[in-house]
Amino acid sequence: MGIGCPWSSQKGLRAYWEVSGLDENALEFPTRVYEEGKVKFLAPALKEGWEKAVSPSGMPVFFNPHSKLSRDMAVLMVGAYFDRKGIRVCEPLAGCGVRGIRIAVETGIVSKLVLNDINRFAYSLMKKNVEAAGLAEITEVYNLDANALLATHSTGKLRFDYVDVDPAGSPAPFLENAIRSCQSGGLLGVTATDLAPLCGTNPLSCIRKYDAVPYASPYSKETAARILLGFVARTAARIGMSISPILTFYRRHYIRTFVRLNYGKTLAKESLKNVGWMYECKSCGSVQWSSYVEPIKLCEVCSSVPRVFGPLWLGELASKDLVLKALGMAYEADMKEAYSLLRKISEEIQTIPFYYRVDEIGKRLKSRAPKPASIVDELRSIGFNASLTHFDGQGFKTDAPREVVERVFSELTSSKT
Ligand SMILES: C[S@@+](CC[C@H](N)C(=O)[O-])C[C@H]1O[C@@H](n2cnc3c(N)ncnc32)[C@H](O)[C@@H]1O
Image 1 (tube, rainbow, N blue to C red):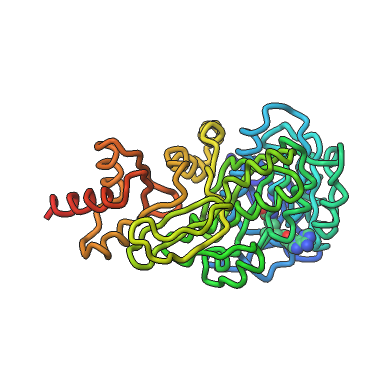
Image 2 (cartoon, rainbow, N blue to C red; image 1 turned 60 degrees about the vertical axis):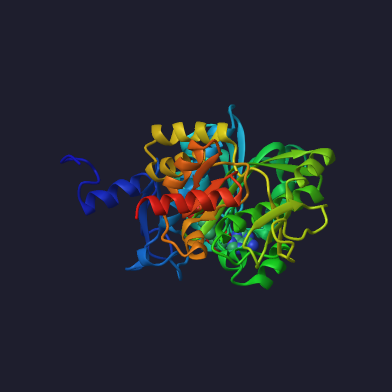
């Protein structure tokens, strides 16, 4: 930064932010100016060592710098999904408001922004951040319970084009109202940070929140995302709407999904065809799946009685076209982490709801494990569809039958000994 630049010294920094409405001393608690994407905003000053925690705690207003990727993805998906201006956006659990503000500033297509948080300190902070971002004219800021806010926007022109449900914990309590407040053809973004229930560490909590039996296994990251999506699909179907996933990913402490919503009971029933059950045979280890309405099956390989999980989403987790569009945007915006993740997702097989792990196959075959990328190359070379998966660095997806996977695995390990 050059000499004479207003923020080249601490004193200059304060003077500059005061002029632009971002006064670190303006609130009842210590704040700091942060910069993320194209936005500068106030959020609570983080305590020393915050980086080590998954999510900083004990602050007057929630702000987690680790969630930048989640916010980058929201900016990218709104930008990629909507090809028109005049978008109405709602962030009902907004914290300091940075997500909604970034979406408005960085996409440039938002005509109405509604930010809300139940925490009164968050409300004061959001108002400051909205003014400083120059969005006061198009923004309404509320200090309500999220469900109350969403319920009052669930009819006609009051509905939104994009609703972003980003709680600390489970989104389940907010989903029905969030879906009701979304236009047909609109986009819903959902975060779940309650991975213990979704991944099966806490099965009864998963049943309580998502009405689904989780799959506690080395593969639970993908099934967690699928349980969340299955729940979104069933919640939407109940009120006559269908979902189509645009992007779903797992990162650090959370799962995030973006789904298109459409009205129509027939469409809703169609989308329920993507919801079903997953089975794991404890005798031979094979994994199968079936639709919601099919009777539960015995293991196709050894006829044992399998363990059953779900209901969960068995359809595609992303739209390749929109992921590729967002990938281009991430490159342009120099969002490196988003770019790298979108690239992996763009190469993933979308039609197989399950993956293998090389270490698990190695354990069963009492062999060392080759790299997942070598197996993928080998399976492709003999005509099968195969890809890596962002859910798991040890994982790979394929349509090859299990015996073929094991044969290729053995060939690869024996050829190198
Ligand atoms: C994870 S934080 C939001 C982070 C924000 N979306 C971001 O990207 O920085 C969740 C927020 O939800 C708020 N909250 C919790 N329960 C709420 C409720 N019932 N209604 C409205 N806000 C609520 C909390 O005060 C907190 O600020």
